[in-house]
Image (cartoon, rainbow, N blue to C red; front, side):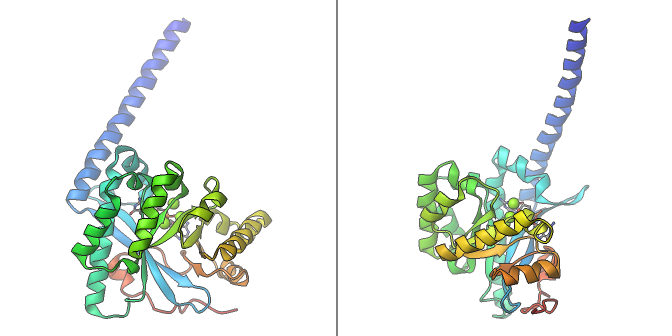
Length: 285
Ligand code: C2E
Ligand code: MG
Ligand code: MG
Ligand code: MG
């Protein structure tokens, strides 16, 4: 009986797994096509200086306009993309598309010529032997100067191969590309890495900002990250700012930059056209 039960549950497990694997494979195929058929879209979210409400840049965030399922956010496909290696193609597509968008904005006016554009790269990208070369090729093709860009990476990109990561980061810096550590505070041994790597900016993870007003621990962590950043001469961006109170708190802690729904959700490039250069919703305390 026990054996029967075992076999039966194995079969159920097996067919459920089979369906999952099939769905994953279908999605992988669809994403591969999506990249080719340009079903992907780059959305933009403003990054704002707390000192004066000025927009200092935008983060490029990928979206998938699926023909049947509608708009899909990265949480639903980035894990699969990273596992299958499709994230490599995807990230190149996003870099190229963002550079094209910058070029098109530049052609209209020089309103945005001072803005920094942040692009996310998966850890996998850094293991690409010709990573820096490919970046240079895309910059040359699109005519975008390296100093317009900031690359966002997570600690996991560094941790897997610190030596080669350091080489790649130094090379990017020497081109003039700025570097940010994303989701800061959620990773591993932040301190040792911070010291030796040429990152300009720490992005405090949204989870700490969310609980800023209610959780004394989050407040202490944010305060500590800000002190650390000041000591190491790095800028800080607080992610996921949704309320005026969070803004005020961060300002009193002398946080440089903020990003979040309080200012704008990520939106299409057409909607990002209408971002104000200085934020009107922002009120100085
Ligand atoms: P991330 O780089 O940490 O990006 C910030 C995420 O927080 C974005 O989610 C953004 O929409 C969301 N967010 C911003 N402000 C708020 C807020 O006030 N409240 C809340 N609840 N959320 C906020 P999104 O666009 O879904 O992206 C999720 C993650 O997917 C990103 O996290 C990034 O790790 C990854 N990702 C996005 N685009 C790309 C890409 O082109 N390449 C790679 N490799 N990863 C990407
Ligand atoms: Mg990011
Ligand atoms: Mg983040
Ligand atoms: Mg993230």
